[in-house]
Amino acid sequence: MAAVWQQVLAVDASIITPLRYNAYRTPTFPQFRTQYIRRRSQLLRENAKAGHEPAVRRQYLKLRAQLLGQRYGPLSEPGSFRAYSNSVVRSSRTTLDRMEDFDEDPRSLGARGHRRSISRGSYQLQAQMNRVIYDERTPGSVVPTSVAEASRAMAGDTSLSENYAFAGMYHVFDQHVDEAVPKVQFANDDRHLLACCSLDGSISVCQLVPAPPVVLRVLRGHSRGVSDFAWSLSNDVLVSTSLDATMRIWATEDGRCIREIPDPDGAELLCCTFQPVNNNLTVVGNGKHNVHVMNISTGKKVKGGSSKLTGRVLALSFDSPGHILWAGDDRGSVFSFLFDMATGKLTKAKRLVVHEGSSITSISARSWISREARDPSLLINACINKLLLYRVVDNEGTLQLKRSFPIEQSLHPIRSIFCPLMSFRQGACVVTGSEDMCVYFFDVERATRAIVNKLQGHSAAVLDVSFNCDESLLASSDAGGMVIVWRREQK
Image (cartoon, rainbow, N blue to C red; front, side, top):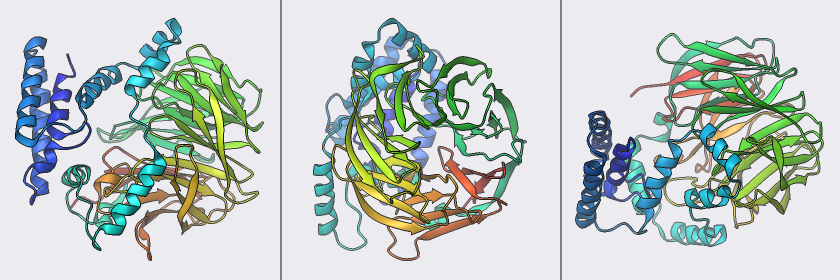
């Protein structure tokens, strides 16, 4: 019952769907709601260390939920609390634990995946509902949903420009100097653990706090450049892909290589991503135009989990439930695949030609584009000097261009991201690298003058960007091997 305090906080802060109870506290003073949740979390953590009997804590949890239900009304989705409780317990187990489970019973993927995944619903129906909501609201108003209110309470009422004002550089890492760093990424739900991969064939795991920031360990083993990597959900495992035609599984705690898996086609591996519901499955893209679903426990590709694109596969991204996979190639096409949760099978659904002959270097998916309403979206970098934002219009991953932003990209594999707290802000922001050696912040809801901020400091094309979980730090990497960590200005 080590996670009971998290479950209590979930009921209180409304982490579980539908983000309801905290939205009703001091409606005219959202900053008080934020302070309440922070103090509540601190007290619950301290109480958890006291070692009370699990039965007593479970009874408290039940009574607390009942009292909040009587005060503010019942949750709109019965059983949503039970689903969240189960997910907390499962998420506390490491990826290595789940790898062992999968070895014992491959069929467990479907059951476990079903319990952890959220309702898929219909993208098309949701898009229609969004249009109705936006058409009926008065200019400048906010859709009055509990999700929007609770999100605003967590972030406060500061403007988007204030949220993304940066005071300067926090630290500069140069251990990979002279070789490009194509990927930099903070660990999941972590403020200070950062990893980056390099074309020198290594991966660095860095710790930013306590000061001074240090390189905890360097993962070596690939004989050629590392093209991509991904953190597991529990951050205990890293998976990496390399131009040496192998993927490696690393234990982040001690840096050892758990397993080396050759590409089924013997081709250069160019990108990878974990299946978000079950991290035993990783999807890789290679230089022979193929995507493969790999079981990292067995080291084998999943039957039916392979498909061919029109070019070298450079970018991959799942939607948050793990039902749709998008893959982009160097011929300018983005394919959507339906992912079978029980078997790992891929079914090709749709194809979009973004720009014939232009490489798709980055794909990022997001279920919420802003805090006003659900708006499934895809952010795409293509070598056409534009950052593209698409709307996902149906449950097969069909894309419709929403808008574009001018950047310099005609050659380098530049990546972009949605800001992690996007749904908590007034407005919505995306961040991208650029070949003009700058980092750009764009407000996706501004019709004109969409640039919110511009960071300068790199001496080569900026290839990737990554926020930590609370947006207090931003990391960016460049083609010269430098990684800069930027600190957000404290208001």
